[in-house]
Each structure stands twice: as C-alpha cells, then as structure tokens.
Image (cartoon, rainbow, N blue to C red; front, side):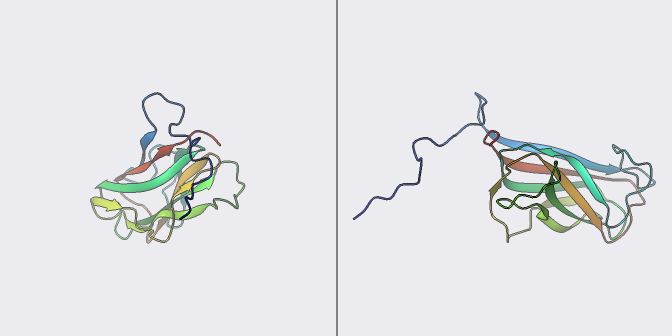
Length: 160
C-alpha cells in the first residue's frame, strides 16, 4: 500500500506573520441615512438599485471561509444585496476570478435579522491580491435609514 503526501506538507504556512494566530473576522458596515445616502461614502445621492458599493478591502492572502450578514435596522422595502469581491487593481485573476455574489445573493436588507452566506456553489479561495468587498443593491432604491454589518471570516495566510 502506498503513502501519498500533499506537496510541501512539512513546509505549509500556518500563520499569517502574526504571533497570535491567523483566523480573523473582518467587519464592514453599510448604513444609509433617512434619504438613502450611504453614510460613509463619497457620494451625496441615495444608493439606487443596481449600484455597486465598495465597503472595504479584503487583504491579499486572505483565505475566504464564511460570511454573516446582520441587518439591525431594516432598509427600504424590497431592498436586497449581492455581496462579493473585485480586485482593487481592476485586473481579474484566472486562478481566483472576481465574483460579485461570492458570499450571498439577494440578501434581504429590508428585514432585520442575521443571514448566513448562501452561495453554496463556491469553494474556499485565497485572494492573490487585495480585493474590495462589494455590495450590489437590488430590488429597490434606498430611501430610508438602514444598517447592515457584514462579517467576513477567514484565515490570514500572508501576502502571496
């Protein structure tokens, strides 16, 4: 009977260059004011259905494991969101393609609650470079106060 080993099984990195471990949960917030304007944005107009919102940066080398969406103040009726990532430099990767709904599709932002990642068709990936966490709205324009926190869980493996 043969023994089969993974390549470089003895040299795999286990920490992301930090002495206290490499598991992480990064939190990003999407909040709108009474007019539907993204509170912490560079735009003074309301977020419309189909708009793409950059919420922050997921660092290069982060292994994407899971996500949780917490809606603590419901948005305008019918507002939903796809949540995914796109590369900061604007250049796609063949190894890990950008994915606008990697974490979730049509997440109900119009109802308070906690929602898990729902895109079961994707595998765990490690980002080869920095990527924006993006939220693409759908269903309706934002026209009221709303607050959602997005928690991205992963492993910081260090920049490739």
